[in-house]
Length: 84
Image (cartoon, rainbow, N blue to C red; front, top):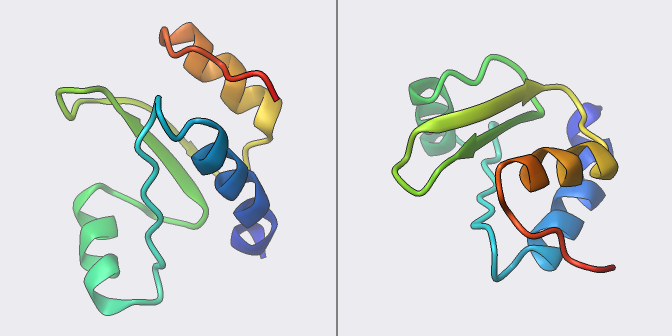
């Protein structure tokens, strides 16, 4: 159920940060995506993982994240938060 609730948040992040972050959705029901999720250690959905430009994981959260939490997090990582 968390994935369904998170979809509008993720879609908003993808749209608002389109020139600042690369957002990738993985549907864990798909066999190929399950392999990718396992490779990066996804144990439950939703899981949010942020990687820096070098591919190093800088943050992870399991469960729903609200938009203000996400904006605060990425601002702390030096990403400009878009005006909504």
